[in-house]
Length: 143
Image (cartoon, rainbow, N blue to C red; front, side, top):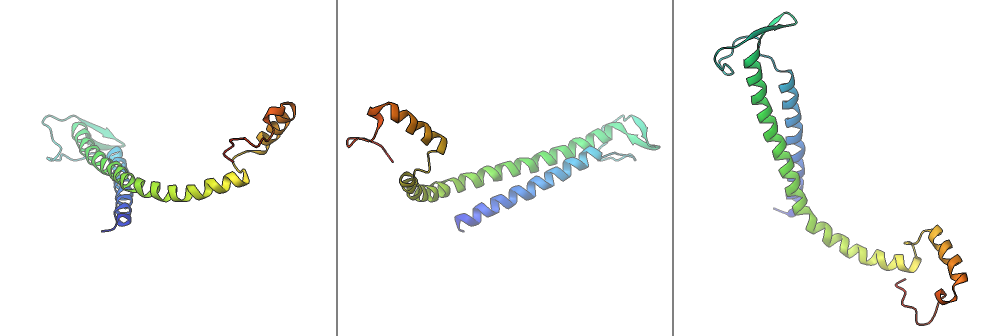
């Protein structure tokens, strides 16, 4: 399997896991147990009403807790896959950027793109008053 395929898998895993985690968290925030459910029964439950519907309070809290746990797991998978994708991707970016930066740095030096026009005006104005800053044959300038 190629490195770019691994990076792509990590990115898609991160996206899908993040979306699933968000959907489950939304479901957890709106979850209610309106009938006695043995999956979430903790023994001795309080009953209330919400908009005319009976709600089992402790069972609802347990259901929300279980859904929050699942959402946290999916969010953790999303973060770990982002980190893994970044770790795999960073040596590639360094290799690509170091080869292109060498060319762009040398061309930037010849065209003086690093210097803003305001800075160049200040430098010229200051050099008029200081004769030692004018160009000299022994100058060690980078650009």
